[in-house]
Length: 286
Image (tube, rainbow, N blue to C red; front, side, top):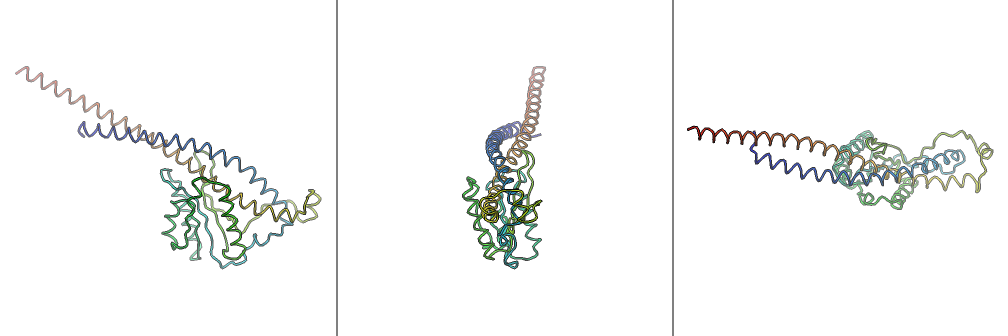
């Protein structure tokens, strides 16, 4: 059995750790509320844009975004993690998905846009360091301006034939306890299903001003920018959800350990007092 002094020191250490984990859980919970509100407010807008473009797709003239002009060019991977740890398997899942995806390309050149220090550090061990760009600053305060600039750069590079494909990997926020790793194509753009077969059907179904093809050409870049920003907000909400759950688990484990140590300390103290009483009684009898 450990000495009472050692047990007491451990009890103090656990209590100090509990203060930290409890505070981190409260902070993460507060940030989760804001991040969840942001992504849930964006999803209907992004979904409606996608539905509108799906209807316009038959008359769209943006075929250069829907097919790769240079299939032999490198593939771009935009991987989103976090800048900090203590969020459970949040970063591990993204790193594993990114590593598996790169290996599935079987040697094809890959350029990684690492949004987060954790994925940046991990990807430097998987691909050449000059093929990894650090975009961790985007996570400090996720803003549409930054996401839009990155999306525009990817669209221009794709259309110029610099890259053959752009893929997004991030944690999608489902609920406070569920975050799913998502791997999806960003470019070339894949249109959704539509019941409109040609321009004539479209004109019979809707009245457009200006021309439908002009609307589609202007709408697609906006949809892509919104999709990338949605991935950033999804990841931000998923990170805070994962951190909240991780800190709650750490707090629960700490409280259980504190209870066990307190019980052990009380037993040891009781045993020590009993032995002292026996010594006194034995001395008096002599």
